[in-house]
Image 1 (cartoon, rainbow, N blue to C red):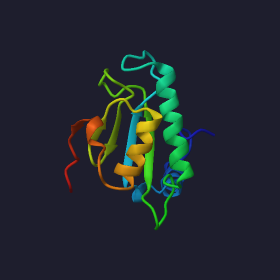
Image 2: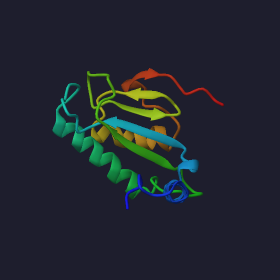
Image 3: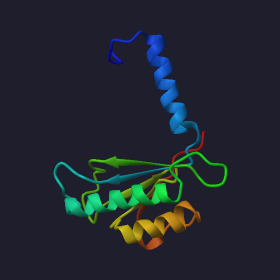
Length: 135
């Protein structure tokens, strides 16, 4: 039985369990990176995949991808395109709204250490900064 065929109460419970297991309500920051593009424009597709794999691996190694009382909870998403088709891979962190250019594995490590863990954006690679409004 697919989710479409399930009664709404089962879908709601299944969805609720997924949301709870991911710790969505406890996300501190969400990192989006353009990677594995259908039509690579901002950078070489292989470079974008390398950057994505590095981000994913490092967040797991540092246990930042799971809910913890000792460290921030960081979500990550691979986006096909962030529409800034220049000097990629492009990476953006929300709710900070800080956009980065040239997100290579070396820069991603700096972003993790300085921005995600140290609350200091890596200024020389920032291309825009538009934080989400506070509720």
